[in-house]
Length: 520
Image (cartoon, rainbow, N blue to C red; front, side):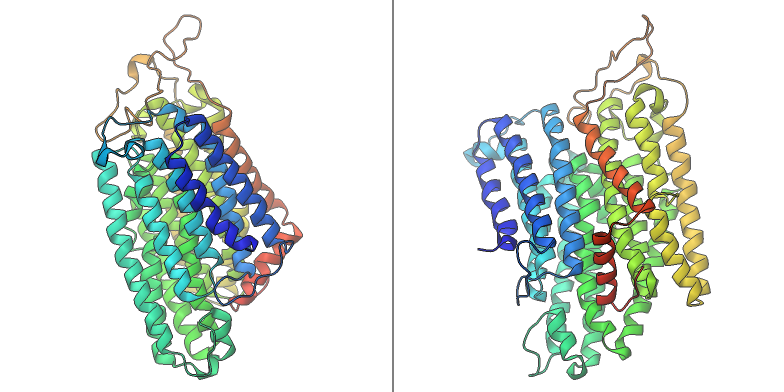
């Protein structure tokens, strides 16, 4: 068994084991050990030390190197954060479903489904066969739905069902796209992979290829969060536990994005379909950016604000790929930086929710004084996610804008800048309101709200707080383990804005060349 199959199968085995482990501490330690082992093997495989893959089913190229590393890195960070997160929640909710003890232990289900989720994402990223990739993306839906329902309240149940139903419809459309793509082939095609189709691109039936791309774009675009198929995303990301939200936004969206990129590889190999696919991507990207900007303005819920920010950024990715040229490499860099920054922000939002017991922006004030480390990281995350220099998101967004100007796509460039400005204004208002202001009095703290995690994610909220010199001013404690991951991820995003290591640049440029673009 090679390294790639270990990355897929091993988390499934350990996930099943987690369901039957009685020790909470052992279960959490196993989750972290699996995360670090997966990261080590992923780096070894992506560096070529484990041997180069070039199979019909499982393969390795520059796109795989980028997304597999990101998935594994984000999972490791989320696992570390979960060490403290799971301590803050009761193991069981008192129910006894089908007399199976592990079904009533939400932490056991959390640990198991997180590892199943990792295995499914690894399968979808490593798959070269279009059919196998579809199976991997569908498996991510099944593995992550119980994670969204972790808190087991009304809102999380609604979010989980909406996520399951809408994404299943999207994946069904993507399956239709796979069938239509198969109809483009002739007897010359030996492998149903991007490379196999590109090799005999001249023999493909262009009409069926265009139809297949539309179904791929709508199907995987639903899972990716492209507007207007994004309706599941704000609910799922805002109601899921913070480490799960980090994985959904930073890793899962990339897996769906890769599904679109695989068929785009085929389309750009044929001039007759390249422009068609590019125009659809630009339109979908700009619509997503514009719609997210409208919803972010005056958004009352800061976790939903982060969710709509994800809709904006997947729009940036689609726009960059559609513009072509150096914008493709910019989109690849943006996929990396967005994953790092957005995961950090969702984890930090978990710290805020645990302390304040509310997701309402208007009830959060004085964050820099009550939780100074979280507050400053929260501000740094805002600067990074809005593309402020010197973070890597600025470099990637500027590369996309420069490509639009160089190709004289004036309308695209103007709309792109306008939507970026719209989102910046909306997020600036929210972040300033939360971080600035006076330190709240303990009597001002909310008692929780219906549907919020007042007795789950916020159970550790100390209503008495810490008093300063006998006063009632509140200062919340901050745990180092819940700050490590945001610090590391934001530092990486900052470093990528100042300097691109050779191996990162090689992977980005290699992926851009696969997609018909130019080097960064």
